[in-house]
Length: 419
View (cartoon, rainbow, N blue to C red):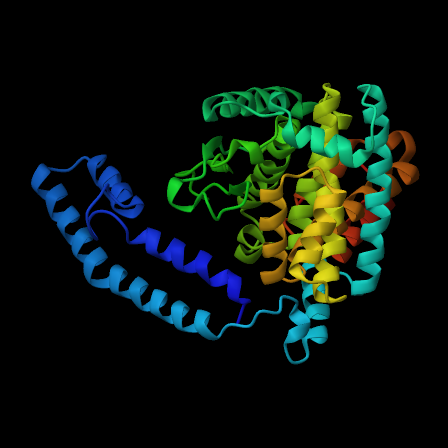
């Protein structure tokens, strides 16, 4: 069972699904509104549309609503007896389970202690690079004081959802223009940007991506959570857009989905260290491509990289070193520029999802190491577009398989690879 504090989130979101029409008074529930919109768009006679809606309404009331009520009842019963300790160490053989989770998500044999130390090393490096930007913008104070400055100054936040979405669109348009200089293979599916829906925005993360449908019926979607604009700093906007959109998850996953000569588990499956490592790699690639011209935006990029490095520390701190939830929140609040809402949600995520968050930085570091290995070995024959094809045209693979592909490509003397 997860810790006690998890259950109110689950129960609240489950209730939200069956709140509103047709389940009760109020506005249409999200699922009923969606059904009505889709049926309304069909080229059918009015009586057939009415029949479909009546059938859908019956299914919602007689099947979905009772199922959710049973789920809510089960969660309420568990909540009454749920544990209060946070780390996975609380379970029988918890240390073994955590070791297995780290191996699964990072696809390495790194121990929890090794990952913890990598995190501390990377945090120190990024803090140093942040100090250089503080000097560049003329800030006189400590790094923690600069973090507080970024959290509290109104100029670092948008005053409307529309303004945030407009700036995201501009950033992605600029990136799309630059992609052919760094990539041979580009996504064929469109990318759209949407705010997270109201019914789940209070519990959802700040940004995430949904891949396109393989038949082209649905574009790739970059979701941004605009529930609280104070959690969505202008300084992070570019890095978030590059990570979730292009050249990050949209480019990688749209290409993966289109690799028709690969088996289904490789087209539609995933390897967290590969996929999230690519997303984090894409943030730094944006700097190499000439973006982040505003030093505050570059600081935001470093802040997001710092966030992933800090995950190595707090995830292993919670599940290996037996830190409390409050201890982990305090460490993350002290060492990163993120607002309190970010920090609390992050620590809660790491507690219920042991090991997953360590994959981002471990994957990114391996991709960077492999690229530098190739650059050193190939010299003038190195072409970053070729390297990106080596990485992307395999579909998601464990990091040792990716390393083998890069080494084989180097041994062949570089050039543009095939899938």
